[in-house]
Length: 498
Image (cartoon, rainbow, N blue to C red; front, top):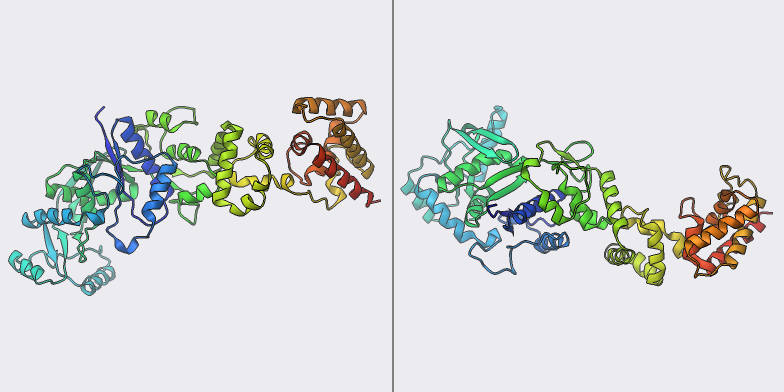
C-alpha cells in the first residue's frame, strides 16, 4: 500500500467541532493504515476570525483522543514542508501568485469595496447570481503593474474562462461535473496581502505532499475553483473525499440549536475519549460488521473510504450514552476511580473538593464497583450518590409504604427496620456481599416475611431516595456503623408519627 499523507487544517476559532474531530479521526486512520503521515496545519489567514489560544486547545483535544499529528506547528522541526501555519507562509504564496500573474491566469483587481457592494445589490435586485463582473479583467498588464507598484489597493483574482466542463472523481461521490459558467473570478490574494482559502489550500497541499483531502460535503461547490487554481499552477490535486454531514435529531446539520457541537461539551458531560472516538467513527461509515466496540487500532485496521456513505449521519445521544456505558463497565474499578477523580477535578471542582475528596479511595471504589453498571456518563456520579456522602432525608412515612412490596403500615416498616438492625448487628465486614445477602434472606424467610416487605423499608432508610442501589449493596458500602445509624434514625422518625 502506497504511504498516504493526510492533513487536518482547521481555522483557529477556539472550539473543536465534533465534525472536525471526526475528520481528524478519519484522516488519522487513512494515514496510519497506509504507514503514512498525519499533518496538522493551521489555516489562519482570516485574521478577523483568529482566537488567541485556539492552537493550544486544538492540540490538547487531539492529544486527548490519541490523534497526535506527525507534523504540526511549533514545536516541530521543519522537514522541508513547514511552516505549518498559513500566516507564516506568506512569502510562499507571493511567489506562487507571481506565476499566475505572469502566465495570465490571474489579474489584479482595483475595485473598491463600495463598488463591489453596489454591484451585489444591483444583481440581487435583478434576480441575478451575485458574482464579480470582470471589470478589471482587461486592464493592460503594464498599467496594472504601475498601479500595483504605486501602492494602489488591490486584490488578485483568478481569470476563469467560461463554457468549460470540469470533471473530477470524488472518493465517496464518484464522478462530479461542474460548469465554469458557475465559477466566479474569485479572489486569490486579499488587499491585506493574505491569501484566500481557495488559493492557499492548493499551494499548501501540493508543497506538503498531501495525498488525501477529507472535508465536509458543504465544500463540494468550492472544488471547481480549486481545480482551476491547481491547473493554472500546473500541479495535480490530491484525492478528494467530501464526507457526509453530521446531523442533529431534526436531520439538519448539527448546530448549537440542535445539539452540542463542541468536543469540549462532550468531555465536560463525562464521555470517555475512547467511547466518543468509537462512536463518531461510525457516523457515516459502515465497517460491515455487527460488532460495535472497537479500539482506535482496530478502527484504523478496518477503515476504508469505500465504506463511507453519502447520506448524512444522525448524531444519536442515546446510542452514544449506551456505548459510553459499555466502556465504563469494561474499566477496572481502579481505572474508573482514577478517571472519575480526574474528571471531577477538571469539570466539577466544587463537588470534588467539598465531597468526593473527603472520603477514602477505598470507600469510593466500593461505590464504583456497584455503580459501574448503572452509570452512562461520569457527570452522573454526583446525582447517583448523594446518599453515600450525606444523611438521607426522610420527609414522609409514605416513602416507606409500597403496596406492590406489601408494605402497607407503619408497623410493617418498623418491624422491617428492626430486623435489618438485628441482622447487621450480627454481621462482620469480612463477610462477602453474597454471604451477607444469603444470611439476610434466610432471616427474612425464617420470619415468614416476603423479601420486599423487609428490603424495601431498609433500602429507603439507608438511601432516603426513590431510586438507589439495593439494600444489600447500600449496607455493604455504608457498612455497620453508618447503616445502623440510618436505620435507627428512621425508626425514631416513625416513632414521631405515632
